[in-house]
Length: 162
Image (tube, rainbow, N blue to C red; front, side, top):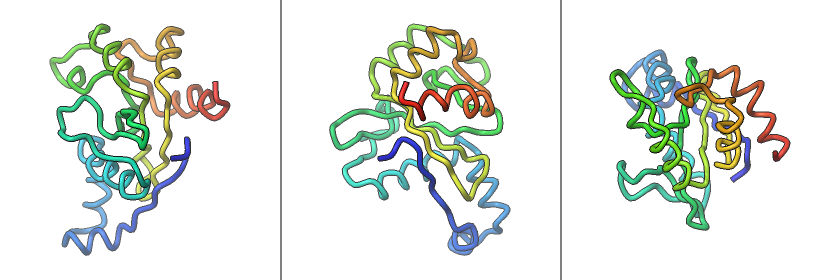
């Protein structure tokens, strides 16, 4: 799998298949909680050797052909977070121990920018990048960064292999 690539969806065909309007498909696929299910499967089906985790509670979403574990996250209009999903949402808080444990258990993150659906840009982010960004305090206090911060300040690190 390349470090940066795109996925294109056909909104008209999706809307027709589900018997809904194109607007409904766009609303569904720009909601990170919903889109990730489809994105994960699309990644597996288009990249031989990649597999879905055995269960939703596995602690990772996909495994690569070498057995490396990857977490799939959506980049939304608000941004993207790197801490465990259990630490995100109303009444939940960031816990560094859980965040660091998450990082030690995966190869990295696969980030899908769903904001411009039906074109979804995908970025493979090795865990070493996230660890360095955290140590340099480039991630927010809850390890969430705004979309524009990721695209303008963090993505160049991935593009240049640093």
